[in-house]
Length: 321
Length: 317
Image (cartoon, rainbow over all chains, first blue to last red):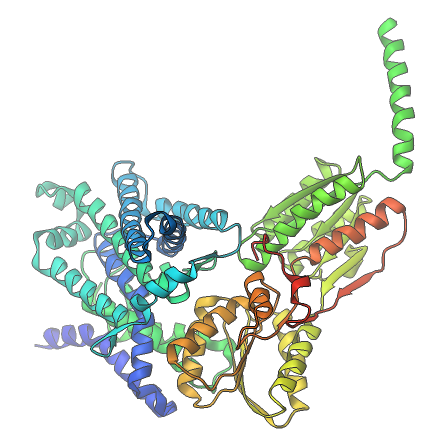
């Protein structure tokens, strides 16, 4: 009974943390609890959240991907170049945008596949492979943009804008996409054979191998899945500012990993939850939002506040590891 | 015997040929700048390369070597290599960070290289012969004075700050000093947008949620102004009447030229200051004239009238 209660408390940790944070936010500024503010925060969480769902699979399988921020930046840059280049050829901005979106997802999948193959068949540590590509991806974006910014043509920007700024039933599109990705992720992890294999590999790779799980294939697929998530996040991100520069997606990898860990997934792999990851991602952006809505803390201490909250939430959901 | 005589003659010929060249101060200039990791440094690299070509044409026989570094440590190594491998006699450097580069630069200067430091200073001025920089307090002051005038001395204003640094403090302090003289203008708050479009977008969204009436935004940088404008558009707010960025990015100068409704002015803090520093240094070196110890390139207000003069469409910045 006690164990069961502890377990429930642990799983509710991130949720309790988010609830406490929301109460604090409302007390500090009454505008915090408005619909518009909630939509703003959830919309801007969508990128990190979608990436974090993919990251959740990779971490549960015992891997890591440090390159997602650079990957998103490079995909954004390539997408913009493709759309600008294709638009005059096909003559229809809508078609050009669709081509760009397809390129984003395909590039994400290709980068993920490369990671997966290097890690499993090349037998290189995921930390090293993705540390390498972290530098490679960003360097190529800087090269393509000549150190400045790649900007989407205005006509294309107008057509593409609604993907970020538009809403359905009063809820912005990125939130719907975030929700869909999270639902698919949760189903895949908890209700399919593939999800069980991912968890099995994370808790003991040798045993999974003896149990005739195609470990390499499952692992490669987790990186492809994450790459696709990065592609989807990027196609929501590009219409926001219509540009990509060498500072795009800086430190997103740490935010995505933090969301996964705060959400109760073990960094050593084996177990984790998609719902927790979603709450973790929202929690991280709520902290930033509250800090912007108030001016009681020195602006120099913002990062410290975020650090404190992350540690407190981790404490709330601690368990035997 | 023959061979020895031959070497002696060729040595003498060489000496004769190079002697007048030395007298004319043949310049081998090393230019060390941070790699193009964001818009402004992208502009620095562009201007450094463009000026390299100009100088080599203007002073035949001179060499200009441009090197970019992506960290302070890498730049320190480069400075050393420039001196030992490329045998430079002139160094123009925009230091990645002040403290870690002071020693390496001082060492090169100790070996007789003329050193011009640009923009970000060193912690010990003895390590340099000359200093060329943009005017950071002026950057804040010019923007502040323009905004106070445009706002008619009254209204609500928010500030987006850059990355917490000495440069940012100097700019914001000078801006606030102007606002102190305009008691009708209320500075609602100032938050760090880190010279980054995404961060500025978020900060501005939250400012718009928090304050029902904002008349003007000092975005203090053109990259941040991009994010600020998107956030205003998204919130469909019409109370904001003025957005002032800064640093003279080509897209923003173009907006000023075209008579944009929100963006009516810009303040220069141009990456072309590396070009000014290279030209001043080259002139001093080749002609043997002295160079002033400190050259401050003023921040200028760009409005519709003079915008064409500051528009460089092929720069990446």
